[in-house]
Amino acid sequence: MCLDALHERLYPFREALGTAFLCVHGADEFERLPDDFYVDLDGTSLSCGFHHTCALELRGDLDFGGALRCWGFNDHDQASPPQGHFIQVSSGHLYSCGIRGDETVACWGLQGQPPPGLFLQISAGEFHVCGVTKESEVQCWGGHVFAAITPPPGKYVQVSAGKDFSCGLRPNGIAVCWGDGRRGSTSPPTDVQFKQLSVSSYSHYACGVTALEGAVRCWGDGKRHGYSVDKPGPYLQVSTGNRVTCGIRALDGHIECWGVEVQLPHTEAFPHEWEQVTLGFQHVCGIHLEGGVVCWGHKFRGVEDQEGGHAVSVPDGFMVA
Image (cartoon, rainbow, N blue to C red):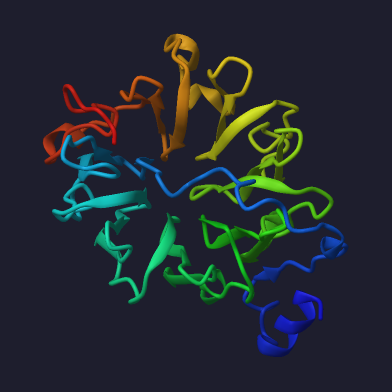
């Protein structure tokens, strides 16, 4: 049964709520890809939130993961992570969540308690969170739009939560989206397989890196302003933000950004080779191959008076796990 037909029976008032669900046409034509086809997000060590940043700090006594360190705006304790050993972190609007070494989830800031269970991957959107469970299913919570936390059933290898909608990656590389579908945000292309997805927490659009060519394909709002346009690449990873998209180029390892770039100047001022890039509301951070973290973008007046300092001011000597 088409997913649209299924949700038509389950949620007859979805039109009135302004939500939309994806009906996949021809997705079954794609076979399951090799188990390691997608970009490995298990070790996501750095994440930009609204005006804060969180990362896993390198510790010599741990083989994988580390202690959490956050900086930036902290009015709701979003930059005050719990103690302990974490293996992944993801930051949302005024909160963050992380996966502990035992694969349970913890959240801090303005976010409710996560559900019990074990998770392989976590993604914090603007107000809601989604995670891939040990059973390879997606579970979501929080937020204020019911459809955004109601993923279609089935198996997933990745999930990305955004602005009242989310997208997940099936084992055959097909993208599936659910939630607020205004401006086409829940209508990804179905004629291509992806290896990584990124859903914007601040704009109604999403992008993905294609599995074969490494091109960036985008859908939703922003074509006119250039932040959700397709790029031939090849790219290793893509990250979406507030009307800005950044990708790591495969040929030279540099970060390239497009869209309303005035918000994130001097992208080429850091001639590193990068292994991860992440976008917040108006700042961007990256991990270069030497394990260091660099952040740049706007510094907001009054933020320096809060505990944690600026979201772009990386602690001295910080090395990411």
